[in-house]
Amino acid sequence: MGANFVVIPSNAEEVEPEHLTPHEICRANAHRKALPVARLHPDHLVLGADTLVFLGTRVFTKPASLAEAKRMLSELSGRTHHVITGVCLVHHRNEMIELFSEATAVTFKTLSPGEIEDYLSRMNPLDKAGGYAIQEQGDRIVASVEGSYSNVVGLPMERVSLAVTIALG
Image (cartoon, rainbow, N blue to C red; front, side, top):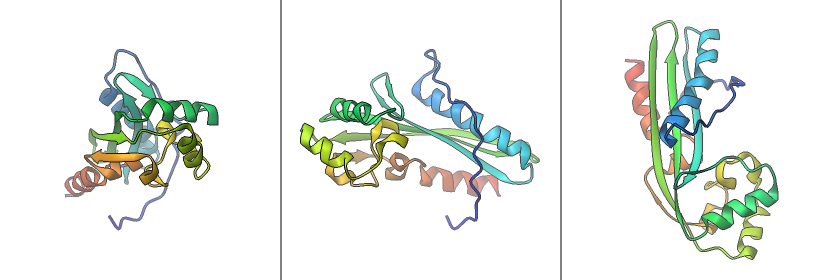
């Protein structure tokens, strides 16, 4: 988008209440991340985002270990899952909040244990929801993407660009 920006972690705790839908969880976490930063920088447009991977109703967060990443990729192998990103744009001084979520369907190739090992040897899965990063050797594991590719990376740029344009008038 050509925007100058600064990354400011909010240290907001991410939540996953069972009574919320996947879209609601991601939007709630994006809101929780954006609001405290917006209060500290009231004259700036602040963006908070949260991305999760869902297979049906099961949430795939960031794996805690390499073994957990292997289990996640094995479970996703040959199946279609959804990547959902919640986005919250806040301009505190102007009392503006824009909150939305985007979903993308991702179908994995059927992966052998050796292919999973090979993929994981080429990237760090521990800070990635679902234990994978489509932008890092994704062609080794992903058969198809239906929807926003940038959403799978972590931020649906098409929707964000439109929302920022509207917010800034």
